[in-house]
Length: 559
Image (cartoon, rainbow, N blue to C red; front, side, top):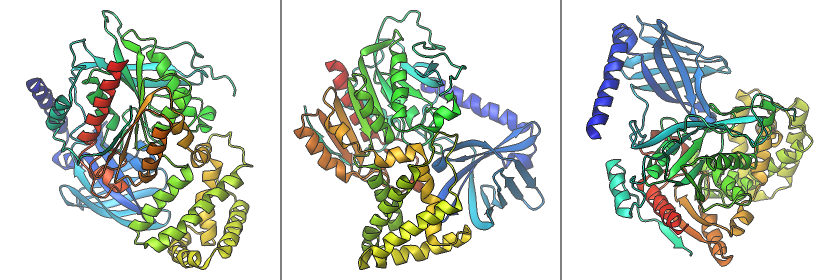
């Protein structure tokens, strides 16, 4: 196998070399991935430009992982060889011009909205993390698609399953550790573990019709337990790609080599999963439950799937989807990775407090500003109740709406206590500078501009108000493995510990594992901050998938 992979890798390099020979040396030096960050207020936004040679010219695409933007076509890529400079011009009024300082570094200025921001981009020829699996695979890989019950969506995904019953389906912890070592992943510290036994959309056919694509069922005489992967919030492709990381591809590889069939799917409206825009505009977390149910029904039509052993792994928002799904369809087990165990508002408070900490705010200021965050979100939801959410995109707040929001928020701040006033003075001063850049009349109208769309959007309205606690406590028909990272800066792991005890008292079959040095993406981390996700070489820490695979195998045997 190692020899075969080496030959394929060599062929890939030879093909690349042949392509580069058709270009001049001056053109060749620009080819590849250029990664950098741009400051947006108090945030650092990671960007990746990919330059290729096509049709006799340099062309570029842009990825902005934090905003879900992938392979955006750059309007123009212009190189000045004499000065060693490059300019990217983008269709949304932004551009970057930089000079090649050495062969791997572009220093220049990002221009957008009247601002000029210094930034640096660094080059790498390939954009791949070490754990991303590479063909040929020791299992079957099939592209599939199927319909949504409404007939308004069609999903596209990747199904993997073992080639034969001889594929290792009874891995022990020792085998998994050996696999981790081959992937050069360091094991994390021992986890903390608690154990307890509209108009019709005519393009796609309406359910229950299912479309099966590229799955050759001939000669299949063995059925495998199956795992459905459910992604986190935001537009996610089937690999849950984040920069160069492809977590779901890594999960599928580990699980399939452990003896499971695995289905991962592009989210509705992402990649090759397409549908009616008006139908998609009203998507909430609850909407994804019907998508997951459609996926499981599709799996039930395949001869290699054991429908008595169906498991779901939900990451972040996918954990909530898995819980809701269990009320509609019997599952053999659920695994939640970094699933929120508080309301959406409290999760947002936790996230922004981490951001304030990074910006140097002391604990006193962070504590008292939390109520401001709660009030801003609550106001946005209240004012959004009268808006019509049945439209293709979230409406932009009018000047009148911003002023009404600002007035209500100002009235609330003036009635708050002295401690809050002291904390708010710091926050208001910092945001005044940003509000001025965006041409807002005041800090309060700047807040209105940013928060009101949250109340006008179907997904965020649902997210802020959803409380997952009852769904966790009422999980009676299947066992659950809950995994949290101690360095998670997006979902607070502390409430989970208390919830697990309540679940045990309620008779839920829960297993809990908390990994102290692991972030929201299940990577071994140093800070847990969002920026670190992209820089880390590790996609999935070994201890997490060893624990998950072992738990799934134990429960698959019981069924």
